[in-house]
Image 1 (cartoon, rainbow, N blue to C red):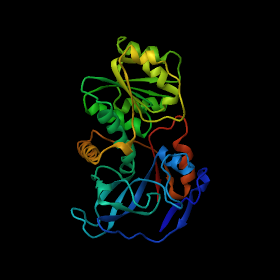
Image 2 (image 1 turned 120 degrees about the horizontal axis):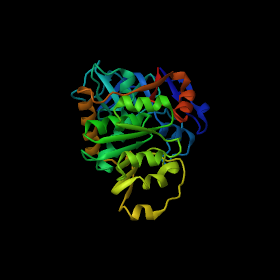
Image 3 (image 1 turned 90 degrees about the vertical axis):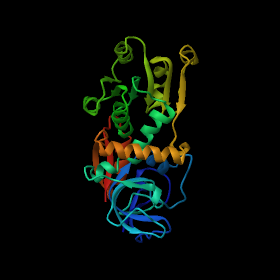
Image 4 (image 1 turned 135 degrees about the vertical axis):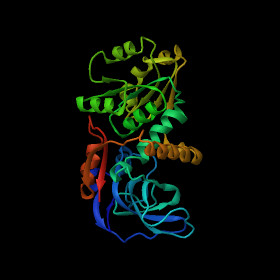
Length: 320
């Protein structure tokens, strides 16, 4: 089969398409033939060697994808060859035509959801739910600001928050992205490149501020986020690309919290609950992943560049 193989950490050019042996499932494992593969920013950090947890070289990147089960190992119950599934975790990497997964990595994909949409579910939707509810303690009736509401996690956050009864504000840097956020269900959308947009957000809340912020670029926004919070508001940091300076008094006068979000800290019980929520949302159509761009598997280097580009909207996927 064809797979992307990384033999050294570095630029996107280290993503090389090679022919490798077809995988074989072990105990409580399945093989999934992938029809679409999710590309996440964290994949680029790992590939560059900048991520704290580095895989052993050589390796095949990726944890997300969707397709059909083609082989089942011993000890597997409740799954059959031919089942449509989305993949949220992989033992051999998902940037490939086939991948080996533990039974805990695969989840049913309803017929109404395309494989490309299924590939958008793993990291983005699990992260969004974990940030909103496990870390952010979001409650119906609260106001949440999705600061960067146009990418995979942003889209998922808007959809989950709307379904849970929150009032949703979002920001985006392009007209296309802001329109997408509106279509996903945001009650109000703001241009975070425009002067005075912070004042617009506060006016939208009648000066009270927002209860929760889902923050995708903390090194740029965290200091400003603190000034947007209502009393006892929370900021959940999903992404950051460097250090930032804040005024602690902005947190003190609001009794505000800054909370980190890292999926590696989620418990198995929390992860299982999140996937149950995803399955329900897919079935009742409150969750609808938005696909931005699709690249052939051989163009994985271009996909890694695109996923970090300013103004990117929707999910980027690879097609084997």
